[in-house]
Length: 351
Image (tube, rainbow, N blue to C red; front, side, top):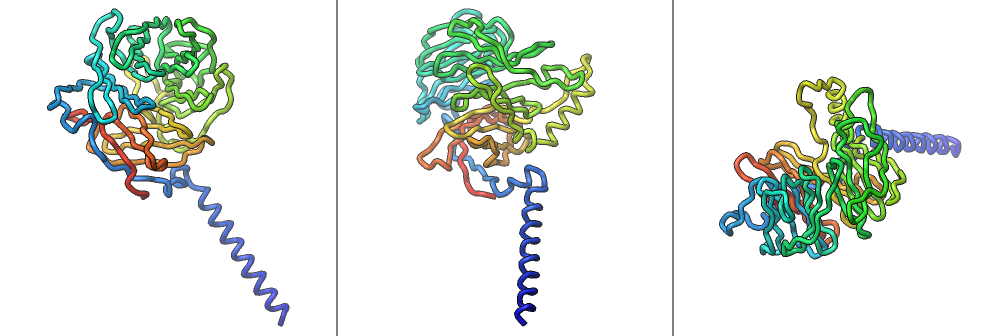
């Protein structure tokens, strides 16, 4: 009798272990996106910035392209068509508005990025190949001439300038490190190469700082490399390109059929990258739906924030942390067919 109980017990244990093994296998054998369905979080519109109808306050946006938030939660918004920067307080009060079309100090050709460095507002003018620095009131402080063509630029706490090269032809490096006067200190980072695909299509980089590292992420392939401040490759991150595997493969297949006599047809798998404390965020934009992918300090995708919208393009964003650390506040530039708005988005619930 005891032997029969023992047999039954072993059979039950066997089936239990088999079921456990099977469920574990199922949970990790699907696509990367399927593994993260439990971490999808719905976003809701909590408001508009600086107001739902800024025109009523005399504030008109034509083509806002870049947005940044500093440690005091001041918000800088760059309008590339007007060649103008707007700086607001967290409450939406206009601190300053400066800039115009031109070639001199305080003037821009076609600026593409605004960001904060210490207590300064920095404006990257890709067309004029320069970086200009202002105080919060818009008073001009410095112009740094940038001799090569760059696609993105950042300044760290030590005043070092990191620039992502705009690769138009065969080049050995991805990133230049410049001193405070714009002089090149070193170049680093090996471009991704695949068959005869032009390097510029594969290496459309966005840069971000994370702790003491420099992140270089390709908007067309999802490849992410982590570098030290000295330019040494520390780690290659696969999470983004695995999660967006279909979009990455679609782009690469289009690149393989690239015809230099015709415009390249492909999509950005993300539009912008921002970091905040122990997280890295990627903005994905598709007509009717926007996503913000959150990567943790271990470089693993942790949350996917999502909102359905009537907009056709979300071009940039930034994050303002709240007292509830798991409920960040996102400020996002939203293009609709007939209007442009700055949305304030907050987490609503998990899917």
